[in-house]
Length: 293
Image 1 (cartoon, one colour):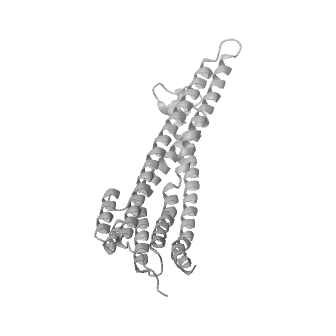
Image 2: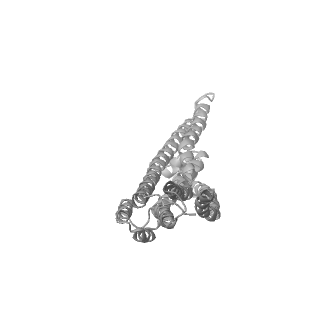
């Protein structure tokens, strides 16, 4: 029982110390997401009203008329009130893609992940744990943080004389898993926004398409001569919303899959380095050390 307690206590300290930091990061990230969405909506409305809807883009200097031939600003404006929503989604995809790219870049560290993992394995092969920790300090980033935590536990278990070999390996493995669990949420933050935008952008575009077709058929169904302008505007609104919705959704899907694959690469690198740490410890400390009462 004393041996079990001695193994569990050191592993619990990093999680307890890092929890408030993780909560602070999560709160800051949530605030950033809210502000980014609100700001994107405000910018979209301003662009829609004062740039796309400027009278210079329309016949007779009136945005109620048809747009001037070849003026795509006026054409997009005729997409109707759904356009600012779709523009907001498009801006959010761009904002969160940039934010994720910067975050994952920082998580990789100063050098390539492959080179870092190769360096760690070389240091471990010659049992140079201090050199491996120095490489982690130089690399920085999420992967280096996890590997450094595992190496720190490696050194601690190497000095431990009261635990069995299997208990020591389990303690190192647990330390790596806990450190990984603290780093991964930061990497995956805001990806759910991209996946949501990928799903709803097309639906919002289709909603705008429906509104446009309703206007078109209403103009067509009028008694007497059909309203050609109303028919054209309705069809234009339908097509513009469809194009914006599909385009935004496509970009969001590509961004989501790209960042997911990058996170998978980081996770694989962590697993590879962690496996090397455990295998090295098992090889270098092959004999079970018993505590003599």
